[in-house]
Each structure stands twice: as C-alpha cells, then as structure tokens.
Image (cartoon, rainbow, N blue to C red; front, side, top):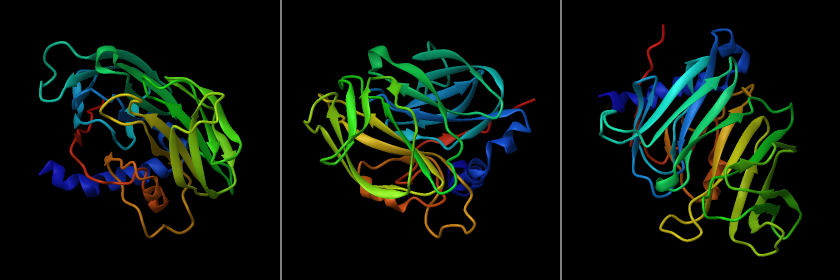
Length: 270
C-alpha cells in the first residue's frame, strides 16, 4: 500500500524541493537525497540515526530530496533485506548545515565502496542555467567534458571529484567525454537541454571495463519555481535511463521517472 501512494506523495516532496532554500532554513533543516552509484553493489537499505529511510535502492537510482534536521547524523548502508542487522557496508557521520542541499552518493566498487557527500546548488541566476560534472566512475581516468567537436567545458575531472558549476545561457547542446588532455571520445552525450532556472549535475557512472557501462546520468539539483507550471514531468524516485534525449522531457520533476523499485520511509524527528 505504501508503494502505491508514493507516486502522489513524492510529488508533494518535489514541490517542496523546488521552493527556495530559505523555506526549509526557517525550520532548521537541510535537504538530502541519496544516490546509488556503485556499479557492482547490490540493492541497499539506508539508515539515518538507526532508522530506515530508504529500502531496496538499486544501482542508478536516486531519491528525491528529503528534509532532515540540521546537525550531525549517522548514515549506514546495509544490503537490502537485512533489516539493519549485521555490519553495514558503509557507516559514516555527516554534518548538515541549515538551509543547505546535499547529495549523499554511494560510489566506488563494492570492495571499496564509500559514501560521498556533495553540496548541491539551490538556485540559478535569472535567465541562466547551471551545470557541473561529477566523476563517479571508479575505473575511468581523469576526464574532460567538451562540446561535440568543440571546446572543453570542464577539464581534468578526477574520480570522486566534481567541476565547479558553470552558469550558461539556456541551450540544447551535444557533449562528449574525453580522457583528460585527449581528443579521443569515450562517451557521447547528445541532446542535453539546459533549461532556464535549472541546476544540473551530470554524473559519470559505470565502468570502462565491467558489466555496467560508462555512461552519463543527469540529475536536477534545483529548479527555480516558474511563473507557469510545465505540463510535463513527474516526481519521485528514479531508475534513470542512459538515453540522454529523454532529458529534454524534464519539467517540474527533479528526476525523469522510468520506474520505482524502492521506497522512502519518513524519518521521525523531535
């Protein structure tokens, strides 16, 4: 029953996530989403301060942003279905600042998996879009991201590092990923639409050599509230497609939904 109501419930969460950072700062909260980017790790359950908040998250899935009280929190990741028993595969303390947005990404291969906390931008300037590249492929070299057959936009991005956000005019552009300093193309990213008021992170995930292929995975970090609501887009947790053309369908949603196979439990606060 819980899973059936999630489609409507997360829509409300999504609307909250689109409101400015100030709204949740007034409640002494931060916003956090959880991302499964470990290419050979099984589905996982995620606990915050000993309570399950995400269950059954599989590779290349992410939650919507969730509100948590500002301050220190213990995040633990367990194999799915273990009910939080036994040793977690990840156990890490994080400090969340009031009014900030974060992505907590499980990255690396299973034998070296870790939790990587990234600060996310909350707003783009009027008339602009923002975009950055996040390197989450454990066996890929440092990379450059360039306009197809053109100039490099982000250079020498290493594993578990990210570029600065670049603020650009809204546009649709074809991008390509190259080994740093090389003209060789290891990944093409066609039809990337950068919409006015949107803040994007493009995650490089998967493996150069392995079952899960190297690919680009776009996520929306923030979207300024438009004067009129777009007619397309859905909220919720997501299994993101590697078809980048689908990115152009993003409307009010944080993520393009291709299917939901895990769920979020509301965390109790005092």
